[in-house]
Image (cartoon, rainbow, N blue to C red; front, side, top):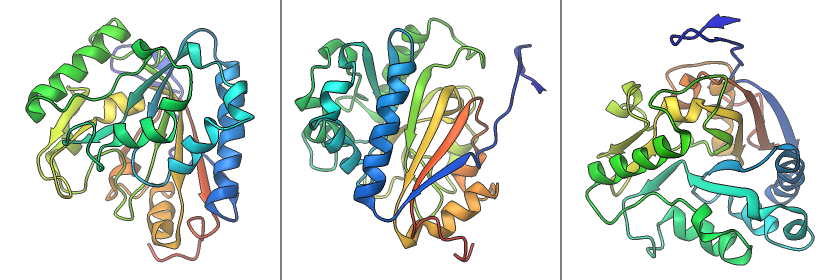
Length: 255
C-alpha cells in the first residue's frame, strides 16, 4: 500500500500487469473483444471508456460492432472519450475520431451525448483546455481521487519508441502533472492533443494493445519498468492487461 498525496491509501499496481497473447492480430482482436464484452457487463451503471487511436485497435473496433458482439454490449450505458487526437479536422483521414467513428461508433446505438471527441476547431491550447473542462465536469472534482477513477477502461496503444497516447519521448508534456489534457506542439507531423499521466492513471483498468515485431523491444522495456520510455512512467491505480500478438510478446527482443 502507498499513501496518495490527497491522503487516500491505495494499492499501486505494476505497469507490467498480465499478458494475453495470440498468434496474430485477428485472433488477438477477437480475444480482446470477448474480454471487453465481459468487462463492460460487469461494470455497474455508466461505463466511461477512453479509446486508443492508430491502426492497431481498428480491428478490435470493427469486431465489437459486428454480430454477435454488437448485440452483447450495453451501448446505451457506455460513454466514449479519446486518449489523444491529431490536430486535424474530425473528417480528416488522420483523425482518431474519424477512424473510431467509421470502424465502430457509426454502426452501434450509442447515444450522441455519450460520445466525447477531443475538439480540433480552435487552437491546440484552447482545444486541450476545452477537453479538460469536459473531463472535470464529468468527474465532478478538480483533483483525482485514486479510489474513484475517471475512466472505467483506458485503451492504449504503444509505439516502437515507447510512447502511448501522444506522450512522446523528449516532449515537455511528460512532466505535466497539473493539467489533465495538454497540447503537444512537436507531434509526428501535426500538433497533437493528449491526456496527461494523471488522467491516464485515473483508470479502473488499463488495457494495452500492441502487435508486430517492431513493438517487441518497447513492450519488453515498458513491462520491465524502463522509465526512459514514456509508457513505463504510468503509475496505475488499477489493473493492467496487455493484449499482444506473439511477435510483440517476443521476450528475446533487444531492449
